[in-house]
Image (cartoon, rainbow, N blue to C red; front, side, top):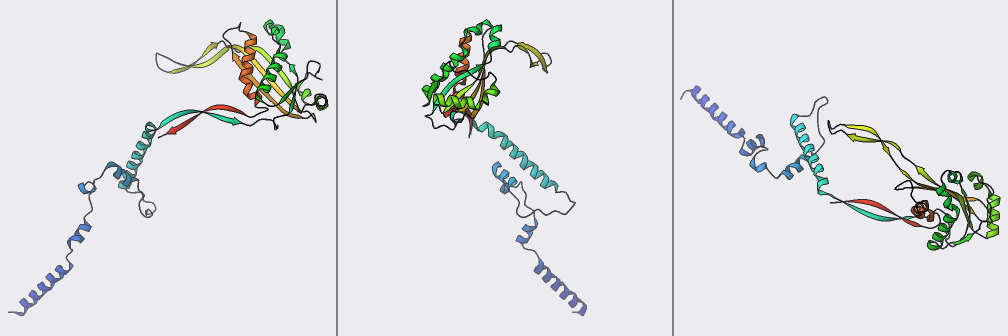
Length: 306
């Protein structure tokens, strides 16, 4: 054999051995092939796919400054956000709403023990001029009716001892602001009656006409657009305005001043004024008694269930 042939044969044998030593095995080749997301083995339920889309990626996201995220990452995030929005939109349809009526406790406005003596003094009547214009109000003894109503409710629903001062007690002024500052007068009333607290104030009862033009929405049947128009609404009723002044019977100082208003619409202009007065009073009963004792107020609440 010639020397050149032997050298060539030896070189070929070494090259073949080197290729066999560096040839990648099957596992290495499999790692080089990217997995197909649409392969049957990679498919799962839609919930698993949604969970994988919304699951946080391990490790911080690394991106070179100034480079936008890849198109595949952007599409994946958009698909996850759309799926999450669909799920949230379907939740109200699966949930229910229940309306319940609760009784909420109300603390008394005055810090009383509950067994004090309370003197009912006269109230300022501010509707005398109104009676001259409407003769129907002349038939209503506003002072007497209110004091009888207040005494009856306090005797029935509290433990306070009511003392009536009678018509002999004359108020020093017909001005509500000056009456609230008459400390010496109320101290003398407390000494005379032996009351712990004294109640006075002002009363106003009148027929109020609230008729007039009001703005309301109007949907045109022609083009379906919404417009605003002026409509005349007739509304007549009785207005009752009470201002309470509560004084300390020992010092004559003012303990509380509060105001209550109620308007009751009537069916016509010739409604009974005495009936309207008591409708106003009974609607304010709970608020008036809450000045002296604890009361309850009913309110609606809404519960959202699965």
